[in-house]
Image 1 (cartoon, rainbow, N blue to C red):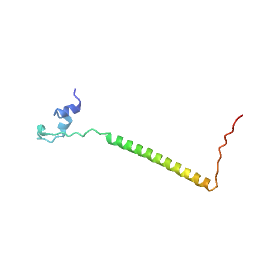
Image 2 (image 1 turned 60 degrees about the vertical axis):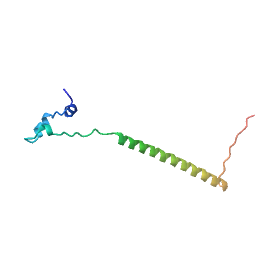
Image 3 (image 1 turned 180 degrees about the vertical axis):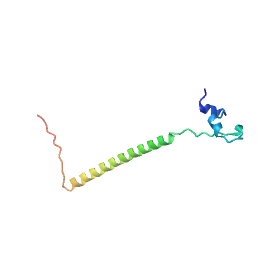
Image 4 (image 1 turned 135 degrees about the vertical axis):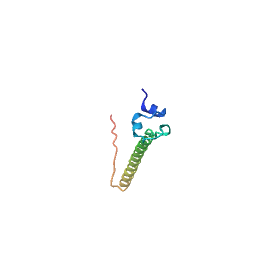
Length: 92
C-alpha cells in the first residue's frame, strides 16, 4: 500500500475525491493541489533574534548601572560625603 502523498504524486485520485467530483467531470484533467509542508525556519529565527535582543538589552543595562554607580561613588567621595578605607593589617 502506498501512502496518500505518493498516490497523489502519481496522479491517482482517491475514492473519496471521486465521490465529490461533479458528474461528467473528466478525471484526467483534475488537478489536486496540496498544501506545502509547514516551514519552521521563520519561528526558529524569530526566537533566536528575540533571545539575542533580550541578552543584549540586559548586558547594556548592567553596564549602564555599573557606570552610574561608579560615577555616583566618585562624586560623593570627591565631595567628602563618603569615604572608605582598606585596612591591611600586617601580622608579625
